[in-house]
Image (cartoon, rainbow, N blue to C red; front, side, top):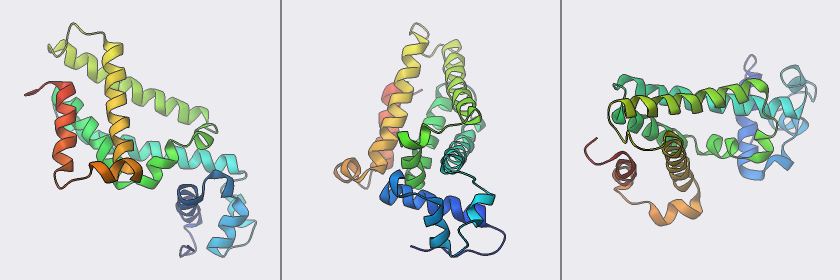
Length: 196
């Protein structure tokens, strides 16, 4: 698929086409020359934005993590505690379902292998935010006797695992029902505790 390209947004067009290529064909088929061909620009044009394929892969990952973090920021409208944890988890899963290609790219080990220090810091900050929210919830009495590290592992596994189930055809097709969103929320509520 050749995306329309208009003067002035080449970087965005390159990122969008690269995400499509990664999702459809894998990282081995992604080349800067191929992107230039698809967008009908000179072979040198992408190099102004991404000197190497590694730079491109890192930019895709950074954009994905930035979008994911922004999506989970909606949870901040809730008071600290289980309700905020719930909102963060649902926002993550909802973002993944509406950005399945980008979510798939973020899980690609070939993409993440090229992570810059900036990207690594972003991922660490996101994990630390999740840990902080768990601590705040525990201070309010939610699972206060549980090991925070175990709760963090459970939260991450449940959130990321549900996102994978809802974005991969092999998993999604058997579990998707008209009540899918309700069932996702109910699954999270099992972890958080009914009524929290």
